[in-house]
Image 1 (cartoon, rainbow, N blue to C red):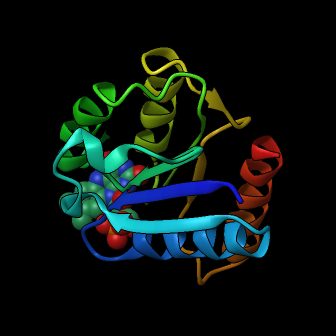
Image 2 (cartoon, helix red, strand yellow; image 1 turned 180 degrees about the vertical axis):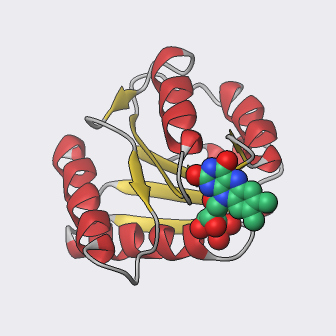
Length: 144
Ligand SMILES: Cc1cc2nc3c(=O)[nH]c(=O)nc-3n(C[C@H](O)[C@H](O)[C@H](O)COP(=O)(O)O)c2cc1C
């Protein structure tokens, strides 16, 4: 069974909801999922032992949330090369964070990324939950 870490940074909870929806989707595909707020992840050994990593942060002032920047420096030390990856985040209008996280995982960590970052305004609105589930299916397919 593939082990996946879904880690998120949120201010008002929207990105957590996306993380939960992705985690549910991964579980439905048979993955063993650990869901964590990044403030529970203090050392690079907390990132060891997973086959896939899905990182998410909300966008504020055109950037990913500050704690996600620190978390990515931690993840840089964890040697995630070749592992399956995805990135997501809630946003209001410009939504830079998921793309920046995705590009860091791809270009710096040399991870095996899914096709694109996932940006959702609200999981509870429109087809948000469906998009999160489809994203989880894409990650699960790469893990097989
Ligand atoms: C002060 C402030 C600045 C924001 N800046 C941006 C921004 O630059 N781009 C964007 O797409 N959304 C921006 N947003 C919207 C948030 O990304 C959006 O509310 C998102 O749902 C928050 O996710 P969270 O609940 O995970 O923190 C901003 C919101 C606030 C309150």
